[in-house]
Image 1: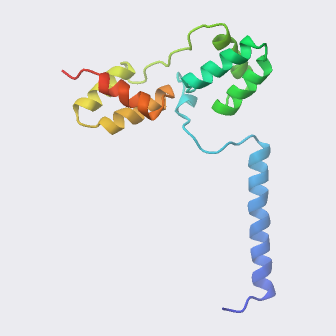
Image 2 (image 1 turned 180 degrees about the horizontal axis):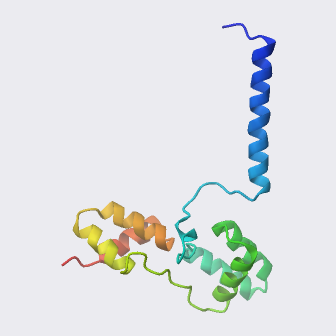
Image 3 (image 1 turned 60 degrees about the vertical axis):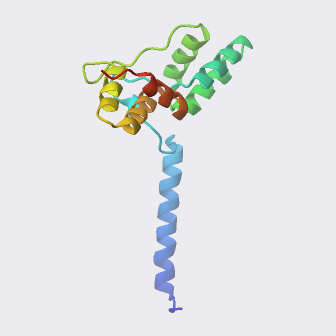
Length: 148
């Protein structure tokens, strides 16, 4: 094992302190672990799974609106106002806003095109990214698409 002198220890300590500072600053700024952020693009809505929607409805039925908003913020990374608006909509039974098609045609058409080209896995990935569906839900959706 090579000898480690005081200079090397000092450099290592500075690096560790700098890394801890970055982690602390990121946590304080509200950074979350990496995840799908396609919905942050203009015209995209956050993925809200069926399970999350059901849980929000249950919390609203129990008159626990604050807990529902917290849950949405944890799951989607939305700000307070956006999470409250989304929770109110789900709790009231309103349909979720639909993402606008970025390519001029809808998700089904794009997924169908990928399926026709033999890119089924990419079509499933696309559907999951834009809808928040689970793997099995997205696979069933892509399987149900009729390719002409």
